[in-house]
Length: 266
Image (cartoon, rainbow, N blue to C red; front, side, top):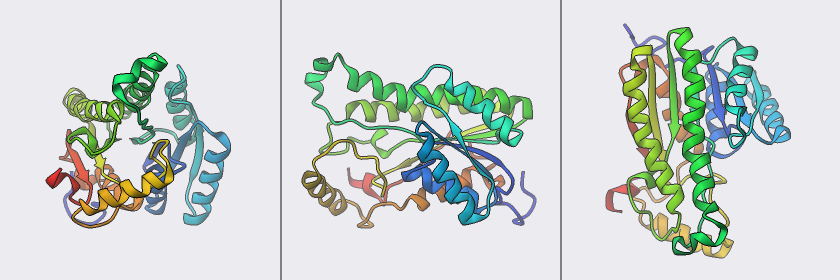
């Protein structure tokens, strides 16, 4: 509860774990927290990239940033990552469930690879968020408080055209409602759960699409975005930092859409 504006937006010295924090939106989130004085754990599957990102961010902002090894598709790694975070920093105050993937496929042909494009995306984009949240929440309950912020997508609420990304959109819709459900359940432990839903953002999340076709698609999307441009990762990160700060103490179970107004007419 804030009593003045002094330090209302401060996240200094909070212990923050960011999944997929080594690239794209996750990198922007990791850098934002580091710049604001938080202790940051960057969880990634690729140890080399994760350590490199952690070192670069630590040096850039003179911050306490460490790599947390973990594969969200590997059983047991969710709990191990939280335990490593506690060992390295003494606790976990904020979890940012950012890591995810998208696949483009014709849904009517989904059986061709035994529905792998459905199941694997749902496992990474939805189930892994739930697992990470459960293990983080157990530690937060011990501490007496915590904040969990999920990265969803405007695709959770609208049909983004002309994508054929049904598993991604379905998973993100699940993330939105999971956020609401857990916000209700875990409020008794003083754990807040919120969601940021970006639209098109300058990141490496695009799936395997021909570059020429992707350029045409981007033109199509930007013509339908009122602000006329993509999000910057830092703009998503700013919202995440706010949702981790004392200023947002009365905000839980919300989904904040950041898409330059794309959803307004789509």
